[in-house]
Image 1 (cartoon, helix red, strand yellow):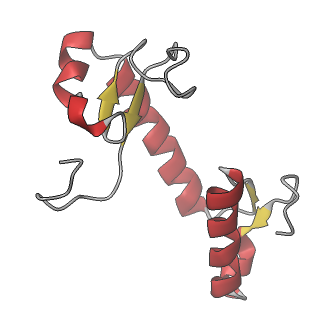
Image 2: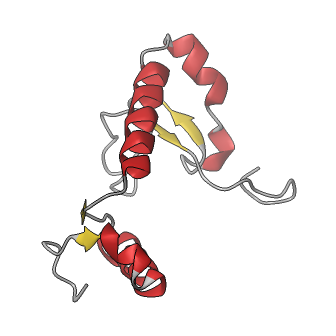
Length: 113
């Protein structure tokens, strides 16, 4: 990727140059915030569909159930954040969205645990 967000990652290249594709994914996620891909392996499409289904099931749960996954101390960096509590504008406005942040497991002594 040369910085053009219209570039789509070609996953068929995983069999040609895995390291280059990995660097392109990292660049897209870190510097742009997302990646767009083509020629996805069927396993990736199946995984995407399963994740979308699971996320839909989670957000369809009653608020009382979702709040069991709310971690106030995480600042929205882990767990569930209900509508109106998050802010992507450094507190100037509250977000009108709920979200679920899932990431790598953190050590018990990590500040976000």
